[in-house]
Image (cartoon, rainbow, N blue to C red; front, side):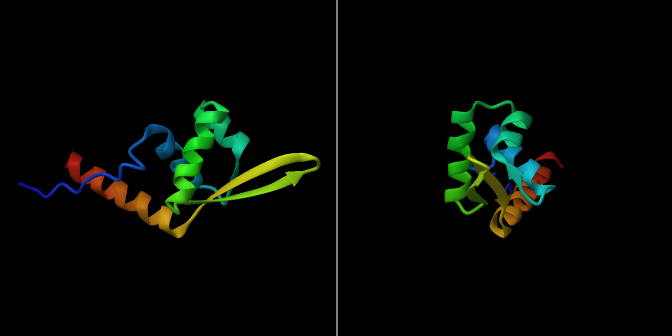
Length: 95
């Protein structure tokens, strides 16, 4: 019997996994872009971004674009490693 590595509960959430997956292929992404791509509500995505940031998986930068607030997210090395480990563990379940 093979050893099944537990899946990272932080990434096992559909919305958090979608956010990290999007950020994997981008240098950074604005809050509105992530909201549009995931179809999540502003409140829900905000909570999930906070959880990912607290875990060190993403970095959140708050600034202004003109007079409007701008929130930008970027995956960290910790987040990159966590995502790669999650994918490896998932493949192990499938094989």
